[in-house]
Length: 248
Ligand SMILES: NC(=O)c1ccc[n+]([C@@H]2O[C@H](COP(=O)([O-])OP(=O)(O)OC[C@H]3O[C@@H](n4cnc5c(N)ncnc54)[C@H](OP(=O)(O)O)[C@@H]3O)[C@@H](O)[C@H]2O)c1
Picture (tube, rainbow, N blue to C red):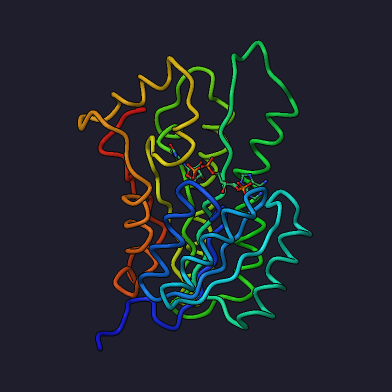
């Protein structure tokens, strides 16, 4: 029998109960990884992902945590320690979109956007850095909107811009341990947060790529699968756009 690329590896996927994270969890499981399907509100979705993986002969468990709470993220990693006793791959997929006109700033929403999109991946990566070893992987999620901001989404774009700095810094922090750190940068993607995009942004994003369509979560998961694989051992500190050359 042929060996699977992620056979014997344990992968944490944050936000695995729906959207892109769900597809990433299923893809990494197909590639042989044991999956920690993390959720916050989507417990049922994460449990369905686990059932699907187990029904195909894989191994997975679902654990909840609000990634904006360092304490809850610490408990999540303790759950991983007791259930799997190892961790090789971390996909920081959980994220939150939102926005509004600059003059209508909602400070609480702005704090929440920074907390989920910036502090969340930081808390997760810090715990991961205590556990990952040679061949380890951290895959962060940026956004095309950080590279090409649009009116009304400045806070989201700024929060996602921080991810590139994290990736480049953490790649240097962890390279000496043989761990790679990279960013995947989706454009508008379905299933995922694009599905809840209001007009006129919906039409803008649908036409932002010369392919004149949005991406699929499966297409994003394929890029994550490459970065998670042993094939990507010399790719670190990189930001990979998976957006059909979109400029919004
Ligand atoms: N889809 C797109 O168009 C698009 C474009 C560019 C970048 N991205 C990025 O891709 C990643 C995945 O997005 P998506 O499209 O899959 O979005 P989504 O369908 O809206 O899902 C968001 C995920 O983030 C999790 N999450 C949100 N707040 C959380 C919190 N406080 N604690 C823990 N988990 C939390 C959610 O978990 P629960 O449901 O369990 O709460 C959910 O699984 C995000 O980082 C996003 O910024 C997406």
